[in-house]
Image (cartoon, rainbow, N blue to C red; front, side, top):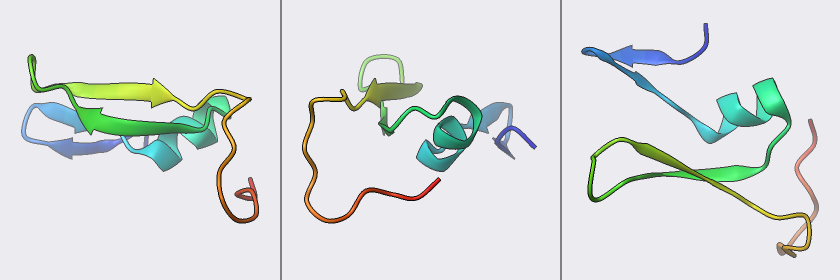
Length: 54
């Protein structure tokens, strides 16, 4: 399954993007279009705590 179907739309999850492409990201609702907006987290971004295991 590539996403969860919600009506006619497919819900994009951060875990799905990470599993498929290895991209660490955040998914938020675009306030203009109402569609998912995927924001990649750059390689130079430092997060607190240990990195996620894949």
